[in-house]
Length: 559
Image 1: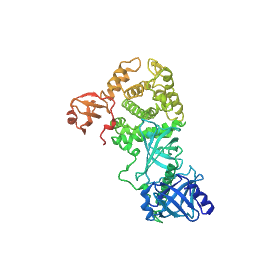
Image 2 (image 1 turned 120 degrees about the vertical axis):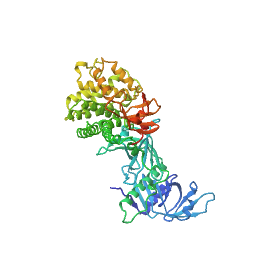
Image 3 (image 1 turned 45 degrees about the horizontal axis):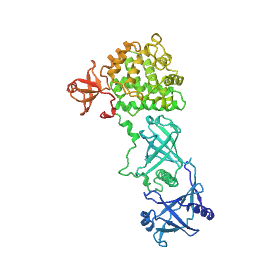
Image 4 (image 1 turned 90 degrees about the vertical axis):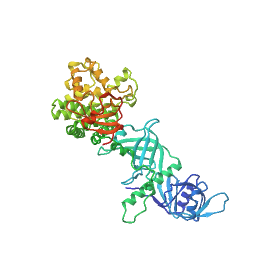
């Protein structure tokens, strides 16, 4: 329920409040039904029960509107409250040379909102306000949408894949809300909480403003009132319709769609856009883990079925989609890539569907324990022995959070969580297990995990080329099961789906489909941009000369 102001009509109380508003910097003027934001003016004289004298010398642009007797309200701060007059009109005064002064009637009543930061103006349908959050210098801004606004702070809706960058207590060097009119609220603050909604579809970030200046506070208050007014207008259409708030009248120069909404639409293929729904589950699960929750058994089962269904529907499209999710955090990209390739490899060897589902589920989350480690450790450009020991703790951290997933076979959890980082020669972690101790599933999973990890950029090293990763694994038979390395290469090929390659013709393109012999069947060419599907067209590109390092899926043509 919205909070209503108290109305003050007692002459003595009005006098006290007006006197407090007359302090320098204590009052602003806003015109009724006009798109001009509140402007600071001076309340230079108060003649009780008769008139107020306003000085607008610093804002001469409003003189003509006042002369035309356009209605306005005065808003100010008094005794810890926000105070607003009823609509007033003014007449020019010529009593002080060099100054622009007007007189208006003494208010008969005042609306008073006592400063309660808990009062929040909720934005409803059709009231879209974009928000940018700057966490630290040099880091990309996080885009979202305003959910509500109060004097003390606001609630911001973010895409789930961006929320993991924010933590409770984190300073915000800039919080900027941009209204459809183009008007802006810019403040500094701190993150107070990060949570997900009940449907696990969005992240909600509570932000507290640093103590604002009186001018900023009056601007926030104006925005709060306009949001409330627009919400009331939309709720009472057809009764006594109010005119629309100028804040929500779109400006031709204002952004028409919040950047956060466009992220998933930017993904290159329909399959990638469907896969993004599974990514959202993982992003939400990371937030839940960081707040002390366990892995959600029911949702893990549901999204495992969804991912396995996509694999069964079109394995090549799904494998390609896994390289397109460039907006997702690295942990999510890695978990999905390993789950898809591991299940695809196991499916080719006739693994039963129940086992495939368990593989998909466990592989998706196998690395999420890293989200529970200190961020400085995860982002370290180099690791000493002590840091490596700390890093290995992610295995136990996740294993403990899987306790509620009783439908997962314990041997699958053991193979894909506890053993995937072990090595045949005992050099892995967390337990230094050796060859005979490791299951067949963990040997297979290790190869899939390492190939994907090595070909991704990390803070402590650049991404390896696929050829170098293959060469490394084949050259380390004491660490990796050579038979599974060879099976992986035979199954996915020397030039796997999702590779960005350069052809002898000079063209560059993404491999999307292969034929039964592992030859290129479909390529998305980015130089020049087109899509080639027929064998003759693909052959016209020439032979593949190399796989390009650090490919950017943002170069993909959208389908």
